[in-house]
Length: 207
Image 1 (cartoon, rainbow, N blue to C red):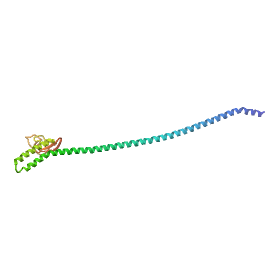
Image 2 (image 1 turned 90 degrees about the vertical axis):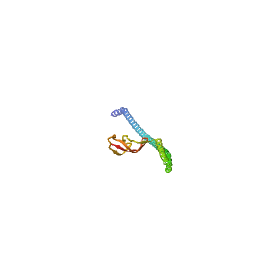
Image 3 (image 1 turned 90 degrees about the horizontal axis):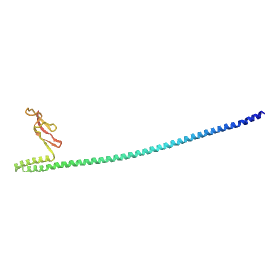
C-alpha cells in the first residue's frame, strides 16, 4: 500500500517537473538567443568600425591629394607672376633707358649749333676782331635760346634774400646800409632744371 501511494505521488509530481524542465529549457534557449544576438551585434559594430576606418583613410587620402593639387596650382601661379614681374621690370628699365638716351641726345643736339659758331669765331679771330665780338654775342644769344628750350633756368640772386636751398655763401660782409642776410655780389650764377638745382649760385652775403 505504501508503494502505491509513492507511485501515485510520483505520478502527481511528473507534470510539475516537466513544466519546470520546459521552463528551464526555454530560459536556456532565451539566454542562448541573447548571447547570439549580442555576439552578432558586436560583430556588426566591429564591421562598422572597420568600414568607418577605411572610409576615414580614404577621406584622408583624398584630402591629401586635393591639398597637393592646390599646392601645385599655387606654385604654378607664383612662378607665372614672378615671370611676368621680371618681364615688366626689364621692359620698364629698357623704356627708362630709352627715354634718358633720347633726352640726352636732344640736349646734346641743342648745343651743336653753338659749337659750330665757336669754331667759326676761332677761325676768324685773327682776321676780323669785330666779327669775333659779333660771333660771341651770337653765341650768347644761342646759349640763352638753348637754356630756354631745355627749361634750364638761371639763378641770379643779386640783392635778393639769401636762400641756402639756391645759394652757396662763400663770403660775408658787414654793411649797415644793406639789409641783413642779403646777397650783395654773385660770383657765379646758379642753374635750375625744373625742380632740380643743377648748380647753386656762389654769392657774398651781408650780415
